[in-house]
Amino acid sequence: MTHSITLCCTKRVMRHFLNAFWVSGLALILTGCAFGVTNVKVDHSPLKPVEQRSGTVEIRPFTDVRKEDRQYIGTKRDGFGMPLGNIGIRNGQRVELLMTHFFEEALEQAGYTVKFRVNAERAQDDNAQIDAILEGEIEKFWMDLYMATWHDISIKVKLLSADGRKTLWERVISGGKANALWFGLPSEFAKVIQESLDVALNKAVQEFSSEEFYKAVNSGRSKTVPSPSGS
Image 1 (tube, one colour):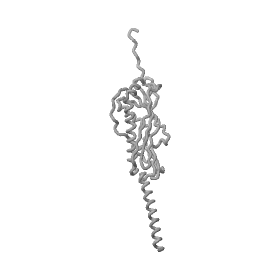
Image 2: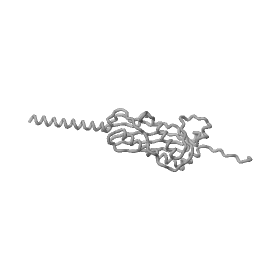
Image 3: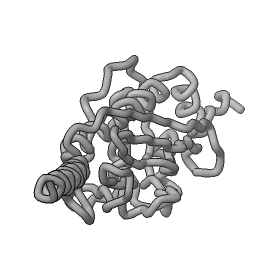
Image 4: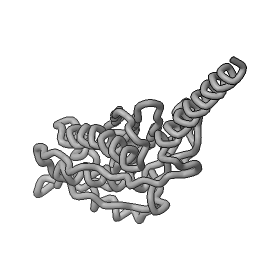
């Protein structure tokens, strides 16, 4: 009798141990079995075609004003929702430079000629070579997960006159996506980020192709009206 009770208790202990082992193992699987930083590729799909516009827009490096730790773009969690580490961008790329480049592509997709300037300092004569200036502030670019993975983007973009003194147009371009989380692999993180970017960048292309934005670009550079002959 004592032997049977002991055997029964042993089986229960083993069962609880195996269940705990399985849950812990599943938690590790759901986070890619990795602590620390997981670096992923950040890219977007081909942008959708839109009505073509014309004009020359200078784009300046976007500013990262996110509240989160700016060296990362997301948080990794275990199966219980506890943070295990962060998501970074592959090859040490900075989110502000990537977003500047992606919005440059969005402008080009809408038909504009784009010039990139590292800083705001320029010779005054350079103003004649552009119609307007685009600046951006990255307010949100973050991925998180718990039984699902999601990513959100919010970027405030502003179009300035060629001399940078007047705001001609302003928008907040946002995007987001959520997917089921299967194995917590880096490819799953990259996929949801790409799909979120696709939403935001195609919104940007639509905005840049709009009549409102086009008129703002063309109003950005003051035109010299020739004097009537003989005056």
